Length: 338
Length: 211
Image 1 (cartoon, rainbow over the protein chains, first blue to last red):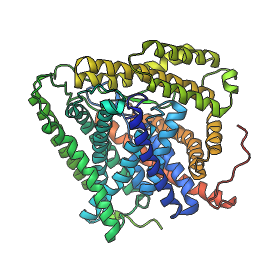
Image 2: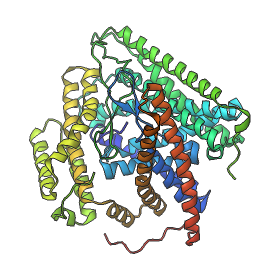
Image 3: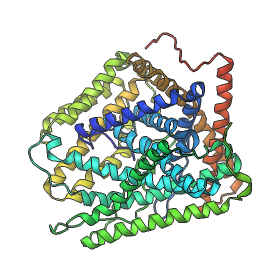
Image 4: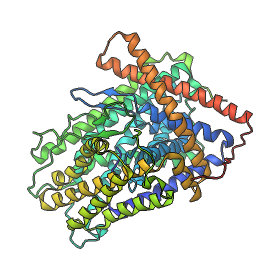
């Protein structure tokens, strides 16, 4: 998930940098006006928690690598969208400047994908789902699973867009136009990320349901939607969902008449974050493994993306419903914190 | 993560200068046209010279590179794979080369710029103090929580008698994170109480920087 330096062009880095600086600034502004002296310890601890939580390995089927939590939605469920966004931002900054994980020039893009989409978008989606389903514990779990999955997909879609813009001639300063096929990169990314999204949804859902059983007051109650706030949040949630949907629809919008080979989609390549070996801490790397043998007709590219989408959606709903059922309902209606 | 080596001439440079140097190297890497191979080579020589002067062991560099390159190559390879043709290979190679250079210069930076110095530098450049306080807090407590995770996993392993089913490990992993969450939030409450007892009002006050 951490984009290294030099993958994105300077112009795109600058653009994402400005956007994420604005987002982080707005989060600081909102936090200052809300809960004064508790902000620093709570947000700092939430960041440390996400960081440490990423150490816990989850095995992947058929692959020698393991995956881990990303944490944007979990942070938002814990401390709200503004503090959650800051917490994930801090994790990314420290990973960049202390562990050389993720590039400096691409820090803005990384913050945009994981902190802003993860915490703001995740929180918006989660709230929308919770309010839709009645706001009890089951709705909370379903909301967190759906939000995790959507935020991963939206981040993948946004990355494709940035990647395409980076290779686009005019922005690179070269007159030579690169014939960049957005649809193909979408196919590759979306296939991977629908599976990453399932993993993230599963982990977040299980953690949220565990916490709801043990100490429900820690999960923030669904915010009642006033008209204006509700509308804005719904719009934001809609954007996130639309981006995720666009990721699936894009391959169909393309023309495959050029006769070039379709990319090797690797629908069965599972989540691909390889953990660092040895005694040292963190530093995790993502390895999409382009498994050979899927280089086939354009039709397969389309079919595989739809399959991945359907699989992902079904799995998300399944996880959400199953986790919701595990909870004994009467005891754990989330109470407001204070 | 710590590499044993005494302070070198690189460590003694002013913190701002170190940041500027790395920023310049990364920017230069991005700005040089992809076709200009000699310039990339000279940049690489510069970076390696920096590593030599900072006394960073070659083995450490190679180990980090071995872990980093698969990720970078994935990005680089996705271009020729998805776009095809010579142009895709050219772009991909450029990404691989520049990415490695930028990564190596970042490794140099994290080696010669300790975290407190980084914070002090950021403070001097007027980064919001709330953010810096959070960052310091997070840095302090992440190591505590790392150890807590290690202890919890060890205890869990001791109690599960070698049971390692696939689904079991997912369940246990989520429960470890959940438990960590509950404990760390309680800890944050305690720490907040202790901070209040020492006169915390929400403003961050620092002693004069000695960076």
